[in-house]
Length: 205
Image 1 (tube, rainbow, N blue to C red):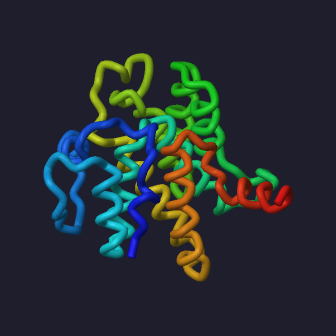
Image 2: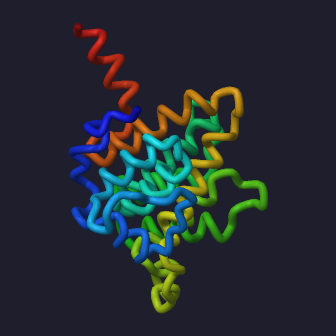
């Protein structure tokens, strides 16, 4: 059984009903929600978690988190697919991270260019897509005249997190719990690295 307190204190997520976010972003959850229409994102996440609907939990979080926080969650998952020293990380990942650390038209443009020039097999182009469309447009500059599809950033984030989760099927069960902890930490205003905080806490305990 899920502990409801786990989904409280999500200060980065807008204090609006989850149903409003789902409708605005055209999110299609697979699980029937029994909570009332006015239920918060935290309440709906707790219900989904209790029902074992982890894909829907991730799907809702990807759209409920603000774009910058959501893109960072996606980037953390993308990093798991590459060596920790960063030697093989593609531009679609590094430019998305640059936008997270310094949101601007310039960093979004770099992410858009990385997306446009990505190789067919680029594993992290969804990170660049999420950053490039983070303001609801297809990108900066001339592309700012065109609206992105509803929920484009959230959809790209959900796709990236799912891809990272199952990039190593043997690690998927462990990663599922870790990725949820990361998203909830980000939603509480943390850096998305709860595993590092636990290690640090143990070192001082």
